[in-house]
Image (cartoon, rainbow, N blue to C red; front, side, top):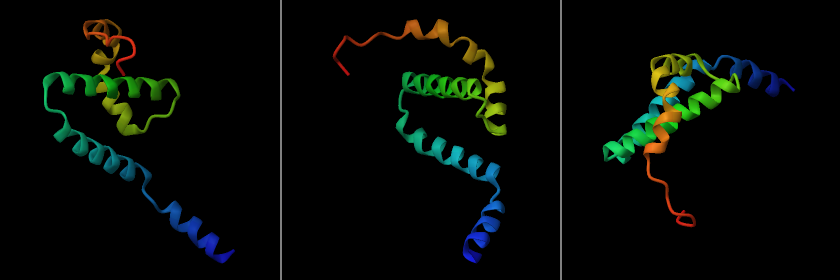
Length: 94
């Protein structure tokens, strides 16, 4: 039982916001080398915007995500009008 209490006390010391901030930075660093064309960058930005919109509707955003959403609010609001410009894949091609 003492070990569990020590675990809980040490877990409470973790700076959760710092962990989420670091994780977001690592995710961004991992994706950057993979995005080679403007279209890939645009699609990745749209995907990130959709993820933010989904988290906001679930009330599950971190303060950093709120800040990012505030910066990208115009792009997020434009998502419904932007997506039809991308060509649709033929059925069964994915």
